[in-house]
Structures are given as C-alpha cells and as structure tokens.
Image (cartoon, rainbow, N blue to C red):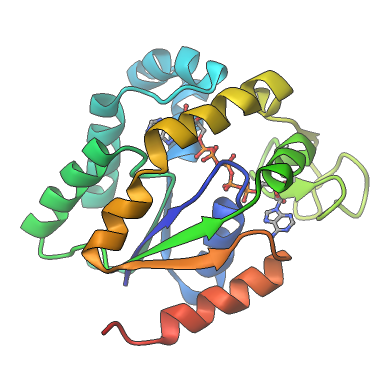
Length: 217
Ligand code: AP5
C-alpha cells in the first residue's frame, strides 16, 4: 500500500509513520528528515535548503520533487511505503502522481491529520529529538525516562531550530496558504481519509490501523 500523510506541522505525522514502519514494515520517506540529513552533511541539496528550512518556508518545489522521486525510485518502490511531508503543494502532488502512474504504483490512500492549532503549537514547542538515533519525544506528552536523554541509545536530546515560536508561526501560515489545498485535491480523487490528530498517539494509531484494514471501494 502507498500512503501519503498530510497535516499541519506537529500533527503527529512522523510519530505515526515511525509506528507504522516498525509494526507493519512500511518504508518511511520523510522529506523533513531527508532534508535535515542533507543539511547536516552539507550536500548541494542541503546548502540550497538550509535557509528556507530555518525560516520555516518551503524548500523550492524543483529541489524537493527531484530528491523525493529519486528516493522512491532508488528504494524498492514496489514495497509498501509512506510519504511523510511530501507532497506539500499541488504542484508537487501532480508531479508525484505522474511519476507514480508511470511506475503503475499510484498513491492509494491519503491520511489527513485534522489537528487544532493550539495542540500543534504545544506539541512543536515541547518536541525533543535524539541527536544520535532521531527518536522523537515530547517534554510533557512523551517524556524520556531520564530528562534530556534518549531512552533507546542514551544520547542527548535537542530541540529543532525551526521549533522556535516565531518559526512555528511561519510554518503554520505556510501550511494554511500552500499545503492545506491538498485536502481538496485528494478528496476529489476519492482517496482522502481523515483522522483526528488531537487524540493521544496510541488512539490515532488504532484509528489508522482500522482505516488501512478497510479495503478501498
Ligand atoms: P518536516 O520535518 O516535514 O516538518 P513538519 O511537516 O512541519 O512536520 P513536523 O515534523 O514538525 O511534525 P509531525 O506532524 O511529523 O509531528 P511529530 O510526529 O514530530 O519539515 C521541515 C521543513 O522541511 C519544512 O518547514 C520545509 O522547510 C521543509 N520541507 C519538508 N517537506 C517539504 C516539502 N514537501 N516541500 C518543501 N519543503 C519541505 O510530533 C510532534 C510532537 O508531538 C512530538 O514531540 C511528538 O512526540 C508529539 N506527538 C506526536 N503525536 C502526538 C499525539 N497524538 N499526542 C501527543 N503528542 C504527540
């Protein structure tokens, strides 16, 4: 199954994608993670993307589209996969559709995480990540066993630069002006399913599992 996760920053897309990948064996392609890795390694993509990401703006379509389509084709596209954070504009969605149609592997389901603004702000402000393995925590909702340290590998946790208050506001504006219209795009294709992203993570996962078990009409 080929799945797109759609929703505002902080809706829990990454958290659910990791759970689905661990429990159901999906490949997980996160645009944000791939871009951050490129920034860290100072690649050509990373050099071009860095300033946009730090401001909370979208990285230009041409860079992201090429990067993600290459990632999909170089992985095993016939395996089940989850796209987390891609597409994020209608232009990206159309390019993705046309490439996946050529491979005869179209997106089958799009999960929209409907999440209130108050909740996403508190989630992003409290998010912490492991500096080594990337595991995701929240200082209140999903705290590590030992403050500031990763449960899995014991490394230090850090806060993403774009999780500052000012950048969170920009990211939400960008979501509303450039990404939200994808809800109608996928609704028109008849493949959009909605879950409440406001629920506790395990409940969101149960709802997602139910949706994925229901055969498409
Ligand atoms: P990206 O990394 O994709 O950021 P995002 O979409 O803003 O999403 P987040 O990672 O912030 O949130 P999430 O929904 O995954 O939430 P999470 O599970 O972590 O993109 C970063 C940047 O890269 C963009 O700003 C842009 O510059 C660029 N970019 C990326 N894709 C692009 C594209 N396609 N085109 C152009 N540019 C692109 O959860 C958040 C927190 O809440 C965590 O602390 C978690 O522990 C907690 N939490 C999660 N679920 C729950 C729950 N149900 N209950 C309680 N707490 C929860």
